[in-house]
Image (cartoon, rainbow, N blue to C red):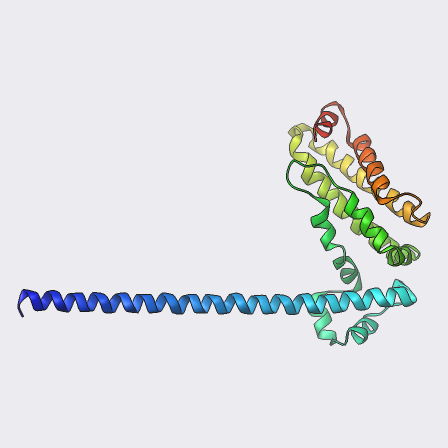
Length: 226
């Protein structure tokens, strides 16, 4: 075989290899695209099912109160199977708390910006009938209060703790816990008394309360700079 023929054969093999690799990349992209699409479909199904269950629980609470609602009531109202319920939640308490997940995102703003209480109070005002129903029973009030305390305590710690010296950490954690409990008491009292002030005014009062509970000389200066 002369050199020209050999070069031509090598070129053909190179082109064939390039086409094979290109075809392989296209196939890989198609597989990845299908996987992404499948995940999106699955995510939408999960979201739809969770919304069905959450809406069913809310409707039943408004009808007869949290304590009187059973899991069977929820799955009957949502028209899903018991196995479907337990694929998402262990009990109705978890389902109740799912409705507050969005508050975790709302409670923290961009890094370096102040804590924002207004979304909490607006949410409570928009859902006032449901919130009053939940706070009227001992068990559901305990569940709701604990959920809000967890949200607030975690948010306060993530936002303010990095600004403090390491030796202040233990005391600051105690202050975070106390602040969260005080804030939840302020919120629940506001609901119990018929929401006599606007969400905007309550947000201002909550900010002032937070500063009083957390403040020492260095922490106060850090809060004032926000």
